[in-house]
Length: 175
Image 1 (cartoon, rainbow, N blue to C red):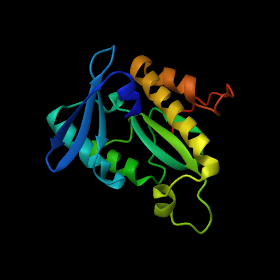
Image 2: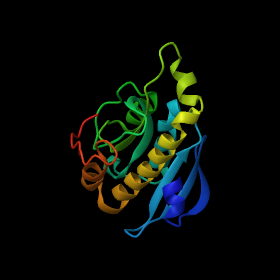
Image 3: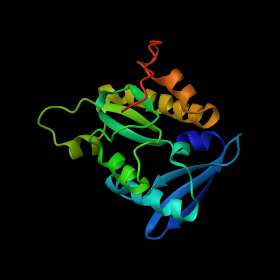
Image 4: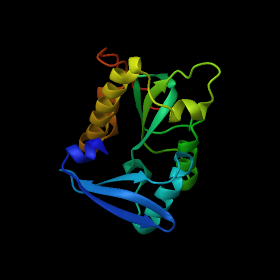
């Protein structure tokens, strides 16, 4: 939502059946719809299914943004499509869309400490020593989403995959 607000998007609200979404529209290439499901993350596909019924879209025009405990904190990965990788939110989206071929932006929040339940880890606050990395990840993720909106998936992959500041572009399209 930060990137949408920074782009001057106006805030609104909508509902799709029993699923409510917050909506913003902005963009130099035409209207861009940013949807923040108000469902639990594991049911986020319900919001997209409701949206698709009222305003059909091609899955390739979508950018799903999610956390990823398999990526280290601060790392992000832009992909054209691929598996859910065990992420229940991505599974929900794939089931709702009937495909796993949609762009996604995974934001690294890992690794999960041994002995800590996954839900406790992803719902818990960042530690004081992680706050700067988390803030930088949000900024870089916002920039990656804006690059996708302005220049497409290939440009976003080329510009943002790899370690921050490393110039190490990871152009693999899967996962």
